[in-house]
Image 1 (tube, rainbow, N blue to C red):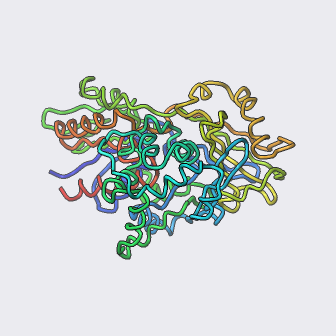
Image 2: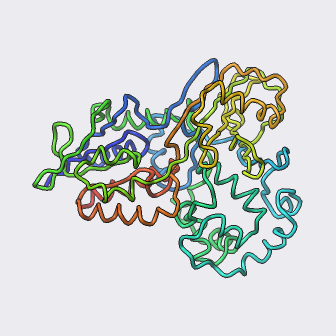
Image 3: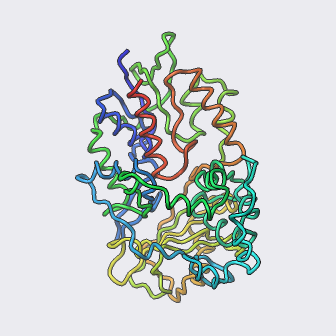
Length: 446
């Protein structure tokens, strides 16, 4: 039977999948309910500033992402973060401290207790865990100590998931960390052994560097659309899939052999009305962090030295702000000369009510914290943009195992339906690209 594919959702997952299918000359149509291509990715230009209203950066963390960008290089200019990206700040007692980058700085840092610094010496000898559902918090306390949880992992999790390490399950939320312990018995020992393992020429391309594009991440979206062909994308679509008696699927006015959903878990019942509520319940119940993102542009920066990736704020510091990115330090051309562009984030699973208040009220809360933390004496940004995301980041909590099992069961019961997107396989841009290529290869090969 000739393959005819419907992809639902024109975010990075759907666009990447469409790109791989187009490259393999497989027939497809990409459906999007809104008028915007790119999902949460959207770049803006205003008054000499370039800023994002969705993800701000990505990481070259797998070969699929590296090679996709190589393929698209004629259509957009990839930019890598400045060396400042290596310096990451953590707040403790209203003072910023650089996250240690080596043994000496690790010994000197005030972020961690002496007891836990000494405990770290024993980490390679601690027995590996046997609970696959262990939370990130429990794993870190067991292997590294409370202060490492409070002033390294907790803010790190806020930066990635806007979530709570006490509820996120290591196996699913930080699978590489989980595998280090399971495969090597230790974080430290495992990292050393992995660094010594031989790498292929392809693997050597994976630099794990922070990236964006010259005019913001929307350049990547535009490059994908150029290669996919706008004629294959249907915007403002009413998306409701029907299942025909012959096993094909009907969407719009056309029958399709395959349906790939890349949308939010909450949207699945409306899109797949033939699926029973009991079948979708353990997928649909996925928890999402709510986040408000604030872009602030200053024509003249007179605050603290922001030559760093940004600053993360541990929960123990009792601030409303989760973290701050110093975007004009990371990428050239994001702010006028002598100016600065910062992005700060509030909300998350711990302070979700902040995402329900208006811009003016939110800024009244955030402004004094920014003045204190960044040394701003005259808070007079020339741009202040607030973007609200009610389903920002999927939380891989204890429900994840049942969700993955139900997805697998559904895909077996309804052949050629694929449940993709951030409901599984990771929440980063590189995760989405790898997932898209894996699914495309499966479809192409069968």
